Length: 128
Image (cartoon, rainbow, N blue to C red):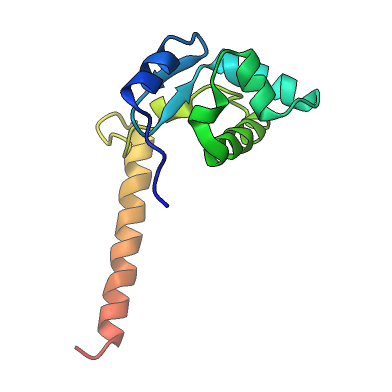
């Protein structure tokens, strides 16, 4: 089984919903407001399909796996210090070495020296 792709009509209907931030043919991103509302309603005992329908989202578009993933994501986000905010925007790859303070630069270089010394010791012991 492959990914359940959204058709153009489904994407357009989902884009018009105020609780949806963006939609592609494979993925959907919900607003922080929706995640908080979903968590509150889910804790109150409502099922995901009912919550989605009340929010104007056709739950049949999503399918079982996406609904299960939504529930898991909301449960995971409830206990994070960042809450329901999307933290993917903050983690954009490797940290920049240009913006280091002198103390951070010294610590990084000391670590690099220690690593290279260990590597040299290992190579001395190996039979090259």
